[in-house]
Length: 301
Image (cartoon, rainbow, N blue to C red; front, side, top):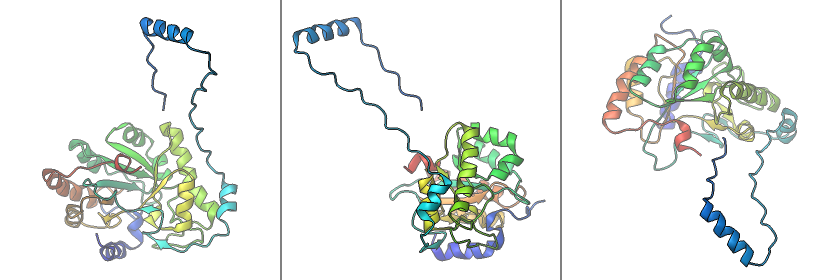
């Protein structure tokens, strides 16, 4: 989708691009094989027939990189002024790698007042058609839907992404988007990203790989903080439901026109809106054309 079209949809969505307005309808290590008896005997014979050499050190896995602390990130970026702001900035992934023919469907659940709903019809459709997707979940939505979260997290069709702690645009200078106040500095960027990341890691038993900010707005310094915290900032190519404001026919039109390699953003927290029926109308045709639907982690490093 051209940027102008994206901007138009964002303008139509207005403050509800966040998807939080009132609902329209109410590494374990691999095992090492044991050597056979004959192999062991042969190895002993060779050892006895050759001069003694110093033992070769056993390779060890590189230690996992330590997550920087809030104070470290504030010290690292506190004096850095951002040069970019919006939905397409350096460090934010807005499409799949060049040459990729699949499409990535992503669904946000923003949480908070008006944003804690669960679109069961949408998820049931994806399951019925075995369509893979990445679900970006906000901490408040998880708290409001603990049983649903467990079901989604256990479903191999889906992967869980980080949609922030309180659903804020990610800025180191307090910039707002659609009337939603952004994070007011590097420390607040850390709180927005790491707060929910730690929550998800505790619930899932592993860290999540992708982060999407509230409203999908970032500045380039905030995007660097996301990367330093071990996650990849995600944007989108196609605004599939206009922040959960589009009709079913409009959602169908947007998704059906998504080009290969697109990341599509929609919302899964507005039951009764146009998202579920629009997705259900668009996806079968794309499947019939041979389109694959992937989770982000399947095609992004």
